[in-house]
Amino acid sequence: MLYIAGGALSALIFLLCLKIRLLHKGIREITDELDEILREDTNTLLTVSSRDRSLLYLADKLNAQLRLLGQARLKYQQGDRELKNAVTNISHDLRTPLTAVSGYLELLAKEPHTPKTLRHMEIIRTRVEDMKQLTEELFRYSVALSLKETRPRLLSLNRHLEESILGFYGALRQKNIIPLITLPDTPVMRTLDDASLSRIFNNIISNAIKYSDGDFQVSLTPDGTITFCNTAKNLNPISTARLFDRFYTTETIQDSTGLGLSIAKHLTEHLGGSITAQYRDDKLWIIINFPDCRTLPAS
Image (cartoon, rainbow, N blue to C red; front, side, top):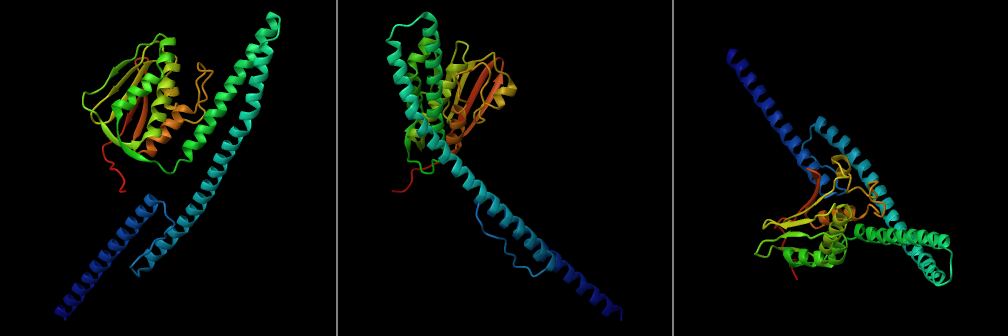
C-alpha cells in the first residue's frame, strides 16, 4: 500500500508539474501575441493553443479589450484624417481673400494719407502678413502629418546642414548673428528623404533665429547627432518641454505659429530619428540623431 500511495503521489506531482508547465506556455503565448498585436498595430485577436479554461477566459477578456481598442483607434484615425483635411481646406480657402486684401493694401499705400492713417494701414498689413504665415504653416503642417510615403536616398548630413544654414544667411546677418558651425571632415551619410530633412533643418534654424539672443551654434558628429544651440534667456525648462507641442508659443515670440518644431519632430520620428529639447545655462539645445540603420529600398 505504501508503494501504491507513493506511486500515486508521484503521478499527481508529475501531473501538477505538467499542468504548471502548460500554464506557463499558455501565458507566454498570450504575452508574446499581445505584444506583437500592440506593436504591429493590427486588428488580430489572441489565439491560445491551451484548452485550460482560465487561460481561455483570460484570452477572451483580452480580446474584448482589443476589439474596443481597435474601434477607438479607428475613430481616432477617422477624426484625425477629417481634421487634417479640414485644416488643408481652410488654408486653401484663406489664401485667396488674404492675397486680395494684400493687393488692396498695396493700392491704398499709393494714395495720399495722414500719418495716423498710415499707422493704421501698417498695423493691418502686419496682421495680414501674420495671417498669411499662419495659413501657410497650417498647410505645411497638414501636409507633413499626411505624409505616408517618402523617397529615401543616400545623402550627406554635412551638405544638407551647410545648405540649410546658407539659406538663412540674410536672416542671420539681419540679427548680427555669426553662426559657429562644427562639422566632421568625413561625410556623415544617411538614407533619408531629401525634402523632409530640409524641412526639419529649416524649421529648427528658423526657430533658433527667432529665439536667439545673438548667437547660434551647429555641430554634427560622426554618429549622426546634430546639435543646434543658441542663448535664449527668456525661455525656461518648463516652456522648453512644450516647444514640440502643436500651436505652443512663448509670450516673447508674437510672430510664431507654434508649428515649426512640431513639424520637425513629426518628420524626424517619421524618418526613424529622435529629437529632444533641453534648456541649461540660459541656452536652448535642440538635439537630433539619425542612427545609421537604414538601407536604400530595393528597386
